[in-house]
Amino acid sequence: DIQMTQSPSSLSASVGDRVTITCRASQSISNYLNWYQQKPGKAPKFLIYAASSLQSGVPSRFSGSGSGTDFTLTISSLQPDDFATYYCQQNYITPYSFGQGTNLEIK
Amino acid sequence: QVVQSGAEMKKPGASVKVSCKASGYTFTRSGVNWVRQAPGQGLEWMGWISGYSGDTNYAQKFQGRVTMTTDTSTTIAYMELRSLRSDDTAVYFCAADFYGSSGNLEHWGQGTLVTVSS
Image 1 (cartoon, chains in turn blue, red):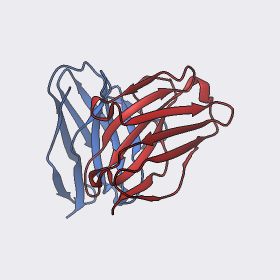
Image 2: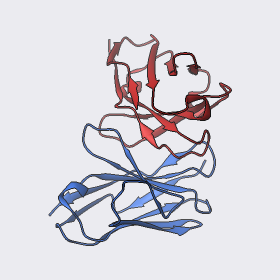
Image 3: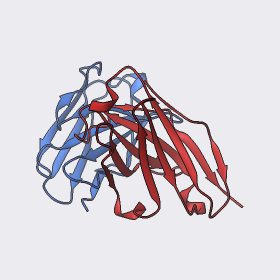
Image 4: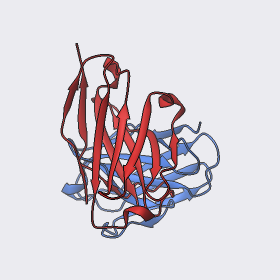
């Protein structure tokens, strides 16, 4: 099975900051990498697919990059609504697997 | 839209069946994934079912204990988990894959809390 590892596990930042979250796969997954945002008590929200394609309706301050084993999610200018937990997920092969999550908190 | 059934409380050894009602898209062109989240923990993929054929793909961890089904007449997907243990306590989500089996979990239900306790 493919293991997904995110870093950092938690991150404190301020409104307006640029933040980057990384995700590493235990083997090459090409660009089969998705990102989700989850707020407390809510279902995850689909943000980015195929490593860098923005889901419809997702603000352009979100971007993704990477291929192979190393990926990043960048938020260019944090907004109050962005404080949440972010998960990467590989959909290269089943069983699909998620990173452990990155909790983005307000500094 | 994807709407799940309500919270369940079960005893160890029992079974639970969670439903997921889909609307607003072509159910038979989609797939439904099931993902769970234990309290304070991350996301765990359990498996997938095709809305077209009923084909399934279960994570090895749940093989033999889980059954996923669909009813195309009502556009409802079901996930049954048997021989429940305390560590099955979690929120169970269904998530629609509009392209069938792309692995893109595009639209999620609100979640169903299943509590397993004696």
